Length: 332
Image 1 (tube, rainbow, N blue to C red):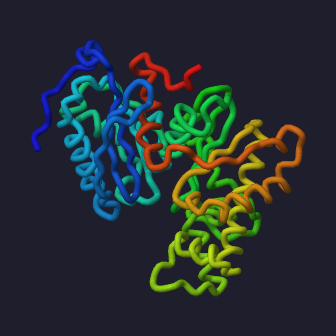
Image 2: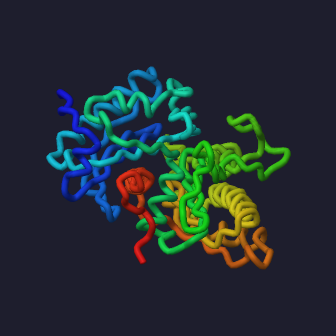
């Protein structure tokens, strides 16, 4: 597909009904979409991430998704682009180093995106995927109206973003709130980050499945994912239930530590593992009551995320909204 002709940011800004373009890059899927000024996701396209191929191959897939989106007749109304990426990210330098995309280490993503003709002159904002999720849930989801909240993605890994004083707080490099690498087990197993006993190594879907298998869980068939562990837990399998309980305990310890540090009053939980419902949320709330005991942490509420798989694109757009004079703050 040939790239559309370049449109300057000024020409885009002059168009009626400005829109935001959003790209969400994960280890499994690359998605791109158009979002309006209210946070409504108007359309999206996606393709698999060639995560084990070269960095150039991954970039080609991202560009292909953008080109597919740019074929939409509304593309000329796009005034800014938000990019949410698996991390770590470095928003100051415009680089990404996703753990699950080996070909991208200190990869200059913003510069590489800006070089594409379809994106010429377009203001861009980069954020981590968990920070984008927090922005989305604050704009249109479960954290709407909350000034201080923690939004957590529990999936293959564990990531999080902070809402402080009514706004997303990404930190100097875009990694603030990285709950997955808080140590909650001083003598725990080594983590891929170089530390040990991290929340991610206990509460992620990967960790829940690994613990269940280690403790003797017998899957039905060849599926050994956290989803399969959840299915066994619903049937009352004690090993599967214990694996979810241990993950929930680690997650509760991380939430309580964060609440003690920055006084959040809400924790929003999304990601694939959250689809387990009460298998995760019931022990999570029980353990949180044991850890969040101070007067200013004991009232923290835990709720499921509201936006599901749309959160990445809506959140990436939310990060870029200020570039066109829009606001991603919840409406009053």
